[in-house]
Length: 100
Image (cartoon, rainbow, N blue to C red; front, side):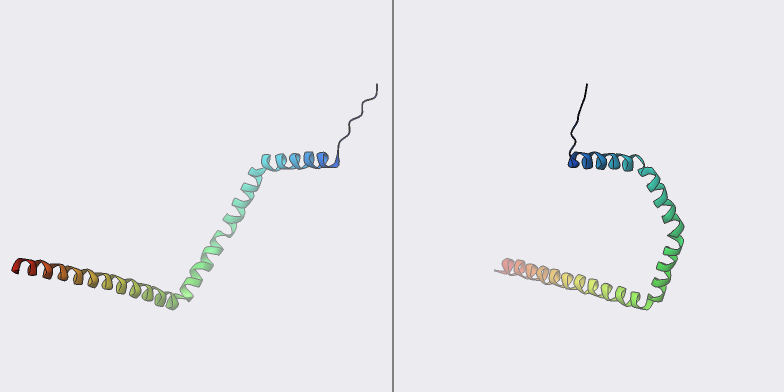
């Protein structure tokens, strides 16, 4: 008895890719552990560098913060003035209604 099975190149490629995906997914915990170790190893140096950079640029940072605060305060003041003007106009209108 002779049994022949024909497998196309595409079917073979697909089977191999499936096996590779299964292998990778079943071993993903190893990569998670590796990534965690690498992050832990580099964490202190990265944070130190960020702090150092922030301290170097503290004058620039202060200017940016001051500019943002000024912008915010100006917007709040403008809104308060608009509300005040609207409020006084409403009061004046009410007073005129009472006197007429």
